Image (tube, rainbow, N blue to C red; front, side):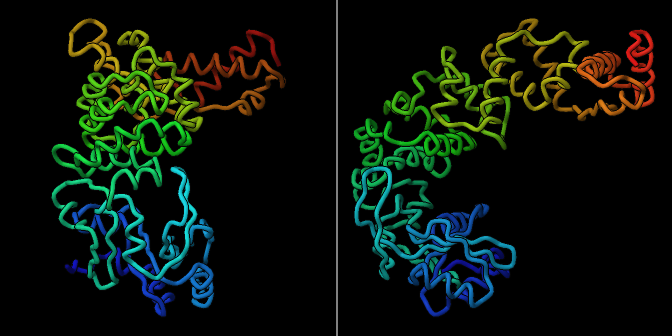
Length: 406
């Protein structure tokens, strides 16, 4: 079939890459083909070519395109053309696999390259003019919402165990109805291989799964398949997550959903370490769960609460607390609704003075600067954030005079 030319297919950067590699056979591959076919937004543009990596780098150099050997041992070069990064990978076939990584050899056979991909909907390629090459029924599967492994499901999983998690993630984003029977059975059978994966790879798949509009059906199937203990998460709370998603709506950050997913007895620090979460992600995960466990603030302290904890974190904590209450009304539920409502309308506040201002006001250098600054900030917060810079400086000077610290 042929797809109508899309804007992303003819950007200056993409055009420059295709022209630079014009003496080889070069096509779009993977997600950009699948998502164009399904009329979904394009996240990344990946290109494959029968030119070998050093030839790709040479052609790019001749065309004045920056070439970054991001994965040259596996045939991947990132070309930055007209300010646009495009990943270009040489056609490959697997020589040796161990469930985590592969030794590859380069090939000129497009079907052989497609055979090593995970799912039929990801194994398609497309010419620059929109002609789609589909070797394994990917068009039909994509349109039917059927996530199906290329060839034998067990063989694909043994090549890379991460494909178990990818199966559930792709079903969450692209699947309709029950998952492919053979694929699901292979995931159940080989789930015991999951502990061989690194935390970083598990983290990436799990968080991307949680970004789906409705991840619950896939997560339920993961539970039935015995996946959770194998990836270091022994207890999940899907009813709470489902309620949290109904309250939250669409998300741009899956970490609060992870906070809702984890069972009540889970040690958050252990999960953060197992999944190799970043410091920022671990802080958000811990913060949302801690706030949701504590009592909400009184109505007259909501502004201070949002300022201290951040509106986004407070909103997520409110949603989590309400989700855990299972819709039961009570004083806490009403207070959490007030927090959520206030967070939705919150305008960020900026404390108008800094330590340098206190020095300029006559205070002697030392650790007391920080103490006084906190005192003035607390006064400013209690005053409803209304005092301006001059008011805060005047209050600071009155405290300096009172303490004699000059």
